[in-house]
Image 1: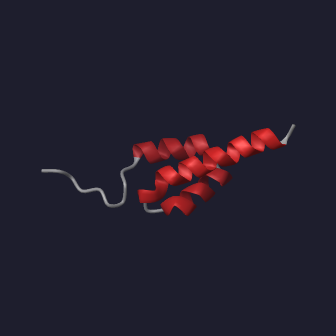
Image 2: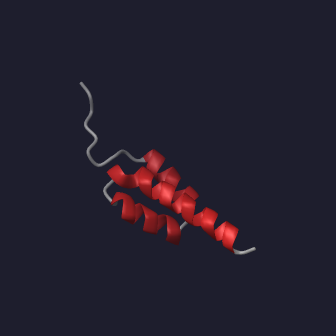
Amino acid sequence: MFVAPLVIYLLLCVLVGYRGRDTRLGSFGCFLASVVLTPVLVFVVLLLTEPSGYQAQK
């Protein structure tokens, strides 16, 4: 009963960590941030920020 929501939560954290692999925090940092905060909040922050290796195209 308690295992299914926990597995879903951790799966969302892993997906957010994967999405944050090109950021300054890296995938593990984004994963930890999503575990501590919430995956939804960290995902929104990832969408609003740019990747660390971002270069403006001319």
